[in-house]
Image (cartoon, rainbow, N blue to C red; front, side, top):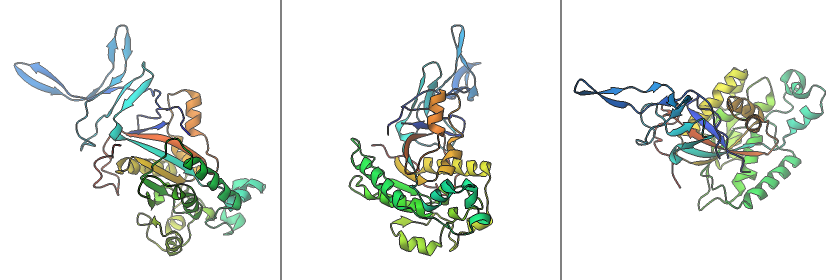
Length: 327
Protein backbone atom coordinates (compact mmCIF):
# COMPACT_ATOMS: atom_id res chain seq x y z
CA UNK A 1 0.00 0.00 0.00
CA UNK A 2 2.91 2.37 0.70
CA UNK A 3 4.91 2.52 -2.49
CA UNK A 4 8.19 4.27 -3.15
CA UNK A 5 7.50 7.96 -3.79
CA UNK A 6 7.84 9.05 -7.41
CA UNK A 7 7.79 12.66 -8.48
CA UNK A 8 5.62 12.48 -11.54
CA UNK A 9 5.55 15.87 -13.25
CA UNK A 10 6.44 19.49 -12.68
CA UNK A 11 4.98 20.79 -15.91
CA UNK A 12 1.22 20.73 -15.36
CA UNK A 13 0.98 22.99 -12.31
CA UNK A 14 1.16 20.16 -9.80
CA UNK A 15 2.93 16.86 -9.22
CA UNK A 16 1.75 13.41 -8.31
CA UNK A 17 3.95 11.33 -6.03
CA UNK A 18 3.41 7.64 -5.37
CA UNK A 19 3.66 6.92 -1.61
CA UNK A 20 8.30 9.06 -0.79
CA UNK A 21 10.32 11.01 -3.24
CA UNK A 22 12.37 10.54 -6.34
CA UNK A 23 13.40 13.07 -8.93
CA UNK A 24 11.78 14.54 -11.99
CA UNK A 25 13.93 16.29 -14.53
CA UNK A 26 12.97 19.63 -16.01
CA UNK A 27 14.10 23.18 -16.61
CA UNK A 28 14.58 24.99 -13.35
CA UNK A 29 12.85 28.16 -12.40
CA UNK A 30 14.42 30.36 -9.77
CA UNK A 31 11.72 32.80 -8.84
CA UNK A 32 12.23 34.71 -5.94
CA UNK A 33 12.99 38.09 -7.45
CA UNK A 34 16.59 39.11 -6.89
CA UNK A 35 17.07 42.61 -5.54
CA UNK A 36 20.12 44.30 -7.01
CA UNK A 37 21.63 47.75 -6.56
CA UNK A 38 21.78 49.81 -9.70
CA UNK A 39 22.75 53.50 -9.83
CA UNK A 40 22.11 53.97 -6.11
CA UNK A 41 18.61 52.49 -6.46
CA UNK A 42 17.14 49.03 -6.17
CA UNK A 43 15.51 47.07 -8.95
CA UNK A 44 13.63 43.82 -8.77
CA UNK A 45 14.66 41.21 -11.28
CA UNK A 46 11.64 39.17 -12.39
CA UNK A 47 11.67 35.37 -12.11
CA UNK A 48 13.66 33.87 -14.94
CA UNK A 49 14.30 30.39 -16.21
CA UNK A 50 17.96 29.64 -15.88
CA UNK A 51 20.44 27.06 -14.65
CA UNK A 52 22.82 27.71 -11.81
CA UNK A 53 26.43 26.74 -12.44
CA UNK A 54 28.28 24.73 -9.85
CA UNK A 55 31.88 24.07 -10.83
CA UNK A 56 31.93 22.71 -14.35
CA UNK A 57 28.36 21.38 -14.29
CA UNK A 58 25.00 23.09 -14.59
CA UNK A 59 22.61 22.27 -11.76
CA UNK A 60 18.88 22.99 -12.23
CA UNK A 61 17.43 24.43 -9.03
CA UNK A 62 14.13 26.02 -8.14
CA UNK A 63 13.39 27.47 -4.74
CA UNK A 64 11.32 30.13 -3.07
CA UNK A 65 10.40 30.86 0.53
CA UNK A 66 6.77 30.28 1.46
CA UNK A 67 4.68 33.42 1.49
CA UNK A 68 1.14 32.60 2.55
CA UNK A 69 -0.88 29.81 1.03
CA UNK A 70 -1.92 29.62 -2.61
CA UNK A 71 -1.12 33.26 -3.43
CA UNK A 72 -3.02 34.96 -6.20
CA UNK A 73 -0.31 34.28 -8.77
CA UNK A 74 1.76 31.32 -9.84
CA UNK A 75 4.55 30.50 -7.41
CA UNK A 76 6.77 27.64 -6.40
CA UNK A 77 6.22 25.76 -3.16
CA UNK A 78 8.91 23.14 -3.57
CA UNK A 79 12.67 22.76 -3.88
CA UNK A 80 14.02 20.58 -6.65
CA UNK A 81 17.56 19.59 -7.54
CA UNK A 82 18.01 16.87 -10.12
CA UNK A 83 21.43 15.88 -8.79
CA UNK A 84 20.04 15.19 -5.30
CA UNK A 85 17.57 12.54 -6.48
CA UNK A 86 14.63 13.90 -4.49
CA UNK A 87 12.38 16.92 -4.08
CA UNK A 88 10.78 18.59 -1.08
CA UNK A 89 7.34 20.16 -0.91
CA UNK A 90 5.55 22.22 1.70
CA UNK A 91 3.20 19.95 3.60
CA UNK A 92 0.25 22.30 3.35
CA UNK A 93 0.51 22.22 -0.45
CA UNK A 94 0.31 18.41 -0.52
CA UNK A 95 -2.57 15.97 -0.34
CA UNK A 96 -2.62 12.22 0.16
CA UNK A 97 -4.98 10.85 -2.48
CA UNK A 98 -6.04 7.19 -2.54
CA UNK A 99 -7.32 6.21 -5.99
CA UNK A 100 -9.57 3.13 -5.97
CA UNK A 101 -10.83 1.42 -9.08
CA UNK A 102 -14.34 0.02 -8.73
CA UNK A 103 -14.76 -3.67 -7.96
CA UNK A 104 -15.84 -6.19 -10.60
CA UNK A 105 -19.11 -5.27 -12.30
CA UNK A 106 -21.28 -7.31 -14.66
CA UNK A 107 -19.94 -5.64 -17.81
CA UNK A 108 -16.39 -6.63 -16.80
CA UNK A 109 -17.38 -10.29 -17.11
CA UNK A 110 -18.96 -9.69 -20.50
CA UNK A 111 -15.92 -7.99 -21.99
CA UNK A 112 -13.68 -10.71 -20.58
CA UNK A 113 -15.57 -13.69 -22.04
CA UNK A 114 -16.92 -12.32 -25.32
CA UNK A 115 -14.81 -12.65 -28.45
CA UNK A 116 -15.19 -8.94 -29.19
CA UNK A 117 -13.78 -8.01 -25.81
CA UNK A 118 -14.42 -4.40 -24.84
CA UNK A 119 -16.06 -3.70 -28.22
CA UNK A 120 -18.93 -5.96 -27.18
CA UNK A 121 -20.00 -3.31 -24.65
CA UNK A 122 -20.70 -0.76 -27.38
CA UNK A 123 -24.39 -0.03 -27.90
CA UNK A 124 -24.33 -1.45 -31.42
CA UNK A 125 -23.34 -4.91 -30.12
CA UNK A 126 -25.01 -5.39 -26.71
CA UNK A 127 -27.60 -2.61 -26.64
CA UNK A 128 -28.46 -1.38 -23.15
CA UNK A 129 -28.01 -4.75 -21.46
CA UNK A 130 -25.20 -3.41 -19.25
CA UNK A 131 -26.53 0.10 -18.66
CA UNK A 132 -24.80 1.50 -15.53
CA UNK A 133 -23.73 -2.01 -14.56
CA UNK A 134 -23.61 -2.85 -10.87
CA UNK A 135 -21.22 -5.07 -8.92
CA UNK A 136 -21.15 -8.85 -9.21
CA UNK A 137 -21.00 -11.10 -6.12
CA UNK A 138 -17.26 -11.38 -6.77
CA UNK A 139 -17.06 -7.60 -6.84
CA UNK A 140 -18.77 -7.40 -3.46
CA UNK A 141 -16.26 -9.93 -2.13
CA UNK A 142 -13.41 -7.80 -3.48
CA UNK A 143 -14.84 -4.84 -1.58
CA UNK A 144 -14.97 -6.88 1.60
CA UNK A 145 -11.31 -7.85 1.16
CA UNK A 146 -10.23 -4.24 0.67
CA UNK A 147 -12.33 -3.15 3.63
CA UNK A 148 -10.56 -5.67 5.86
CA UNK A 149 -7.19 -4.41 4.64
CA UNK A 150 -8.18 -0.84 5.45
CA UNK A 151 -9.41 -1.82 8.90
CA UNK A 152 -6.09 -3.55 9.66
CA UNK A 153 -3.76 -0.81 8.48
CA UNK A 154 -1.16 0.17 11.08
CA UNK A 155 -1.77 3.81 10.11
CA UNK A 156 -5.44 4.45 9.28
CA UNK A 157 -6.27 6.41 6.15
CA UNK A 158 -8.37 8.93 8.12
CA UNK A 159 -9.83 10.31 4.91
CA UNK A 160 -11.72 13.57 5.26
CA UNK A 161 -13.41 13.26 1.88
CA UNK A 162 -14.50 10.50 -0.49
CA UNK A 163 -14.92 11.58 -4.11
CA UNK A 164 -16.78 9.17 -6.35
CA UNK A 165 -17.86 8.84 -9.97
CA UNK A 166 -21.69 8.98 -10.26
CA UNK A 167 -21.96 5.49 -11.74
CA UNK A 168 -23.53 2.64 -9.78
CA UNK A 169 -20.45 0.41 -9.62
CA UNK A 170 -18.26 3.18 -8.16
CA UNK A 171 -20.96 4.29 -5.71
CA UNK A 172 -21.35 0.69 -4.51
CA UNK A 173 -17.59 0.24 -4.21
CA UNK A 174 -17.23 3.45 -2.21
CA UNK A 175 -20.01 2.44 0.18
CA UNK A 176 -18.64 -1.08 0.70
CA UNK A 177 -14.99 -0.04 1.20
CA UNK A 178 -14.04 3.39 2.56
CA UNK A 179 -17.67 4.06 3.44
CA UNK A 180 -17.73 1.08 5.79
CA UNK A 181 -14.48 1.81 7.63
CA UNK A 182 -14.37 4.04 10.69
CA UNK A 183 -12.06 6.99 10.00
CA UNK A 184 -11.49 9.30 12.92
CA UNK A 185 -14.31 10.79 14.94
CA UNK A 186 -16.44 11.90 12.01
CA UNK A 187 -17.56 10.09 8.89
CA UNK A 188 -15.96 11.56 5.76
CA UNK A 189 -18.13 13.49 3.34
CA UNK A 190 -19.11 11.73 0.11
CA UNK A 191 -19.22 13.83 -3.05
CA UNK A 192 -20.05 12.62 -6.56
CA UNK A 193 -18.65 14.47 -9.57
CA UNK A 194 -18.65 13.91 -13.32
CA UNK A 195 -15.02 15.01 -13.39
CA UNK A 196 -13.86 11.50 -12.45
CA UNK A 197 -16.37 9.37 -14.34
CA UNK A 198 -15.27 6.86 -16.96
CA UNK A 199 -14.29 8.04 -20.44
CA UNK A 200 -17.52 8.71 -22.33
CA UNK A 201 -17.87 6.51 -25.41
CA UNK A 202 -20.85 4.75 -26.99
CA UNK A 203 -20.88 2.26 -24.11
CA UNK A 204 -24.13 2.28 -22.06
CA UNK A 205 -22.30 0.69 -19.12
CA UNK A 206 -20.70 4.10 -18.64
CA UNK A 207 -24.02 5.98 -18.63
CA UNK A 208 -25.52 6.61 -15.20
CA UNK A 209 -29.09 5.85 -14.21
CA UNK A 210 -31.56 8.64 -13.52
CA UNK A 211 -30.31 11.10 -10.93
CA UNK A 212 -33.38 10.74 -8.69
CA UNK A 213 -32.85 6.97 -8.55
CA UNK A 214 -29.20 7.34 -7.54
CA UNK A 215 -30.02 9.96 -4.89
CA UNK A 216 -32.62 7.65 -3.36
CA UNK A 217 -30.32 4.61 -3.44
CA UNK A 218 -27.24 6.44 -2.11
CA UNK A 219 -28.55 9.10 0.32
CA UNK A 220 -25.11 9.46 1.93
CA UNK A 221 -23.68 10.90 -1.31
CA UNK A 222 -23.90 14.58 -2.26
CA UNK A 223 -24.73 14.75 -5.99
CA UNK A 224 -24.78 18.55 -6.04
CA UNK A 225 -21.63 18.80 -8.20
CA UNK A 226 -22.99 16.48 -10.90
CA UNK A 227 -24.75 17.80 -13.96
CA UNK A 228 -28.28 18.28 -12.65
CA UNK A 229 -30.29 16.55 -15.35
CA UNK A 230 -32.53 13.60 -14.57
CA UNK A 231 -31.14 11.56 -17.42
CA UNK A 232 -27.45 11.37 -18.20
CA UNK A 233 -27.35 14.18 -20.74
CA UNK A 234 -23.55 14.30 -20.53
CA UNK A 235 -23.37 10.76 -21.95
CA UNK A 236 -26.02 11.38 -24.61
CA UNK A 237 -24.61 14.69 -25.87
CA UNK A 238 -20.86 14.39 -25.32
CA UNK A 239 -18.33 11.75 -26.34
CA UNK A 240 -14.61 11.78 -25.51
CA UNK A 241 -11.51 10.71 -27.34
CA UNK A 242 -8.33 10.05 -25.36
CA UNK A 243 -7.26 13.69 -25.35
CA UNK A 244 -10.57 15.03 -24.05
CA UNK A 245 -10.54 12.46 -21.26
CA UNK A 246 -6.97 13.45 -20.35
CA UNK A 247 -7.94 17.11 -20.20
CA UNK A 248 -10.87 16.32 -17.92
CA UNK A 249 -8.51 14.32 -15.71
CA UNK A 250 -6.25 17.32 -15.29
CA UNK A 251 -9.22 19.51 -14.40
CA UNK A 252 -10.12 16.91 -11.78
CA UNK A 253 -6.64 17.07 -10.21
CA UNK A 254 -6.80 20.86 -10.20
CA UNK A 255 -10.14 20.62 -8.44
CA UNK A 256 -8.66 18.23 -5.87
CA UNK A 257 -5.68 20.53 -5.35
CA UNK A 258 -7.99 23.35 -4.32
CA UNK A 259 -10.09 21.30 -1.90
CA UNK A 260 -9.55 22.10 1.79
CA UNK A 261 -9.14 18.43 2.75
CA UNK A 262 -5.67 16.89 2.84
CA UNK A 263 -6.56 13.15 2.84
CA UNK A 264 -8.93 12.13 0.07
CA UNK A 265 -10.17 8.84 -1.38
CA UNK A 266 -11.26 8.77 -5.04
CA UNK A 267 -13.35 5.88 -6.36
CA UNK A 268 -13.26 5.85 -10.14
CA UNK A 269 -12.54 3.79 -13.28
CA UNK A 270 -9.56 2.13 -14.95
CA UNK A 271 -9.96 3.87 -18.31
CA UNK A 272 -10.07 7.27 -16.65
CA UNK A 273 -7.06 6.48 -14.45
CA UNK A 274 -5.07 5.06 -17.35
CA UNK A 275 -5.43 8.30 -19.33
CA UNK A 276 -4.87 10.48 -16.30
CA UNK A 277 -1.65 8.79 -15.16
CA UNK A 278 -0.30 8.52 -18.71
CA UNK A 279 0.46 12.23 -18.42
CA UNK A 280 2.85 11.72 -15.50
CA UNK A 281 6.10 9.91 -14.89
CA UNK A 282 8.32 11.61 -17.45
CA UNK A 283 12.01 11.67 -16.68
CA UNK A 284 11.96 9.12 -13.85
CA UNK A 285 13.10 5.53 -13.49
CA UNK A 286 11.31 3.22 -15.90
CA UNK A 287 10.04 0.89 -13.18
CA UNK A 288 8.62 3.84 -11.26
CA UNK A 289 6.89 5.15 -14.36
CA UNK A 290 5.36 1.74 -14.93
CA UNK A 291 4.09 1.74 -11.34
CA UNK A 292 2.31 5.03 -11.92
CA UNK A 293 0.87 4.16 -15.33
CA UNK A 294 -0.05 0.50 -14.80
CA UNK A 295 -3.75 -0.24 -15.35
CA UNK A 296 -5.31 -0.92 -11.92
CA UNK A 297 -7.11 -4.16 -11.14
CA UNK A 298 -10.68 -4.24 -9.88
CA UNK A 299 -10.87 -2.80 -6.35
CA UNK A 300 -7.18 -1.92 -6.31
CA UNK A 301 -6.15 1.10 -4.25
CA UNK A 302 -3.17 3.22 -5.25
CA UNK A 303 -1.92 5.96 -2.94
CA UNK A 304 -0.29 9.09 -4.34
CA UNK A 305 0.73 12.51 -3.08
CA UNK A 306 -0.67 15.44 -5.05
CA UNK A 307 1.58 18.50 -4.75
CA UNK A 308 0.21 21.83 -5.94
CA UNK A 309 2.61 24.33 -7.51
CA UNK A 310 0.20 27.16 -8.15
CA UNK A 311 -3.16 28.72 -7.38
CA UNK A 312 -6.00 27.11 -9.33
CA UNK A 313 -8.47 29.97 -9.09
CA UNK A 314 -9.50 29.35 -12.69
CA UNK A 315 -11.04 25.95 -11.85
CA UNK A 316 -14.85 26.08 -11.38
CA UNK A 317 -16.09 24.97 -7.97
CA UNK A 318 -12.90 25.85 -6.09
CA UNK A 319 -13.82 29.32 -4.92
CA UNK A 320 -13.21 29.96 -1.25
CA UNK A 321 -10.66 27.22 -0.65
CA UNK A 322 -7.51 28.92 0.61
CA UNK A 323 -5.65 26.48 2.82
CA UNK A 324 -5.01 22.79 3.10
CA UNK A 325 -5.48 21.45 6.58
CA UNK A 326 -2.25 20.35 8.23
CA UNK A 327 -2.28 17.49 10.71
